[in-house]
Length: 119
Image (cartoon, rainbow, N blue to C red; front, side):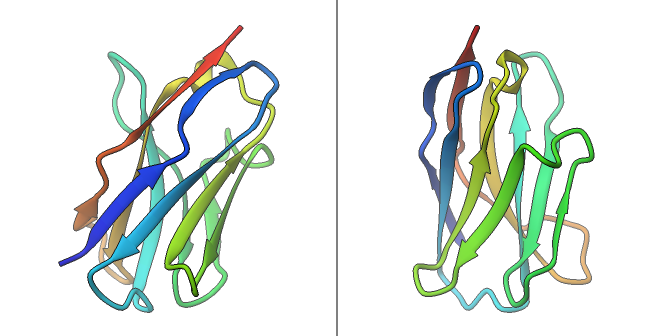
């Protein structure tokens, strides 16, 4: 069973940075893509970006590319989301999710971590 646990959220001033972590467990993730999503109150869940666990291919939402960076540490079984130049509109609950390569459905989700950016 795939398990994902996010951490690293908190309160930060506009212009600041945060690094979120997604600890993975339960299976070998070499055939998986790990993604970050976010959801602000009253809005739909939004794709942030994704990385191949078994390689180095990344994709990002075009509106976030350049400020947000996804990376991974295979030895620590952890995926990271580095967020720079944060804006109040980045305030949301951030989730990580996993899907098998070649499939569109995300089969596992973490519980989310709150990020609040003050102006």
